[in-house]
Length: 146
Image (cartoon, rainbow, N blue to C red; front, side):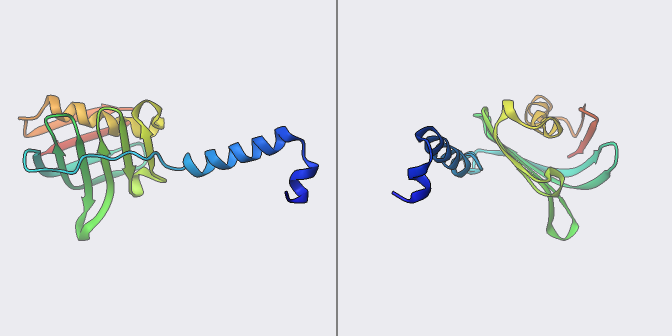
């Protein structure tokens, strides 16, 4: 056993090992999201996104399954993805400059600033046939035109 560990009380060694395990496994939640399939509904159009400091208009692609899986891609011209969101009934992964620095995990533990994005799954499902959908939450406004 290395000298460092021989001189440390046993509790400290256990704490160090446990911290290492948590650090290695807690960085990202391992969750597999369903891949889009032929029976998924897809809608594309434009999204106006606004918060206290920013107003952006870009292209949006929304895909969802009958069982509740959801994907949203918000992009600007030239293929720059501003936000990508994958979500099912329990987990979500959000990436892109608007998600800075990004997040992945159980929906109930999402950072407050990202929760309005996670509301979009239900908001868009409830307004599936509408050509225009508006949602305001947490100081953020989303206006979809499909």
